[in-house]
Image 1 (cartoon, helix red, strand yellow):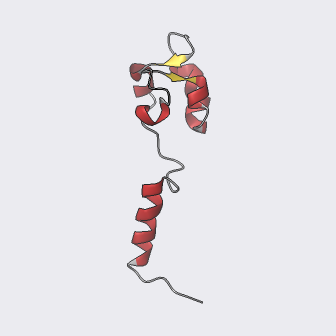
Image 2 (cartoon, rainbow, N blue to C red):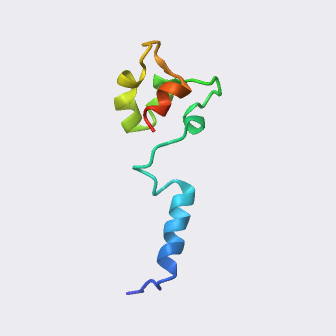
Length: 76
């Protein structure tokens, strides 16, 4: 059985964080969710992030089916 050195664990965690593979419970940025760059997050765009998808209806205060930066800021 191979042992990890003390230096390899932080390096592994840094690599996972950099690739996004370890960021399951972190909140995404507005820019990363706004895939089409229209300045809004649609329900379809939010569907890639489970927690945001669940919160979408309550965050969409004007009920237009999209989140503005101001509406999304309440999620952060």
